[in-house]
Image (cartoon, rainbow, N blue to C red; front, side):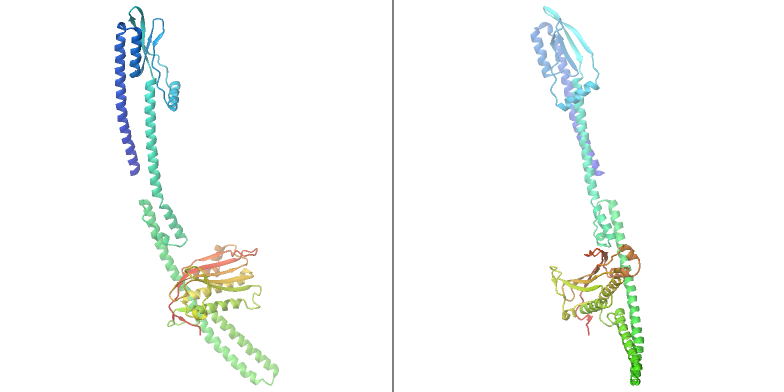
Length: 487
């Protein structure tokens, strides 16, 4: 409003200056016209003492230099012949001439008022002198004044519009940043809100302040939720550890006792082939049960029972071995034989993005990752492969783990995880995330580590859409010696 007021004030000042100049010009014009009329009257008063041609020439010269305003001088001889008429009007520009003609035809009624008198002439018949009303000069002056006022008004409107446009562009320019901040909140990226600059408009600054408070509140709530999720997942792992210990302690001892008893019974019935075959079958069944329990213990506690005094990391080679074992378990002949499972391990240099070989076992033993991260990767891989086996009806499944960074202790590392198949896909990813514990559990684990799970079609070469679960996780390699090495 201040800028618009400044423009309006400048236009008013310009109007006053132009009005003063126009007033001086009008005063000079009126005075000149009055003096011209006085000169004409003086010349007409001396008609009796001058010759005809001399009088007409002097009047024409006077009217040529100082034309009358609002009047036309006409001199007629006694026989009606026009001796002197009004001078030809000065040419005007075509648009102005059109406007003057339009006003003359439509809005200006003819004016027949005139003052006439006779002037005697020496040695001849008297002349008739007439002064008739003329609207043309005043019409032209009024039209020029109107056009000037309209031009000034147009300049004022244009100036106000330009000021308003500049003000609006300057005031609304930060709206893009506010929209980006809102989109960042929606995408769970609070840094877009934290980077909001100070707004130039008080109202927009109030909106930005509210967004900053909202972003801080959402960030705090997400941090608390992540902590709660980590605690819930820790409780789940603790419960799995308790079950693993009970299975190991209870079933392990009882199965060992059964196998000892079966061995003793086999020796006692060595001379009875039919009974010995039954006892040997019992011993083999006990051995299979023990193997199944060991496999179950690995699934419950992939890193074994960990005490608080042990290091907080695990070696990369341990994760590699577990993933190989997990994929090999699903690829076992006789289990989903129509589905081919593949583990794809890749390492990229953070500097140039070039593909590098996966670290050798000797180096992988020294690359230590946080145990929660490795456990989460194992669990989400386990759950994803289980979902594929149960629901996807796929022929190809690829578990891919790609690390980007420098293969050195205490270096930043970006971990890209994905499981893609060529199966039936999902009719609705949102419904799948709300239903059950499969993909929703994977999302919860990924989110608890600060990542986001992406669910979408795999773009399989077959006619079926397939499904691809992908997540990006950020971590740091732990210092050497912070992980337990494989025995």
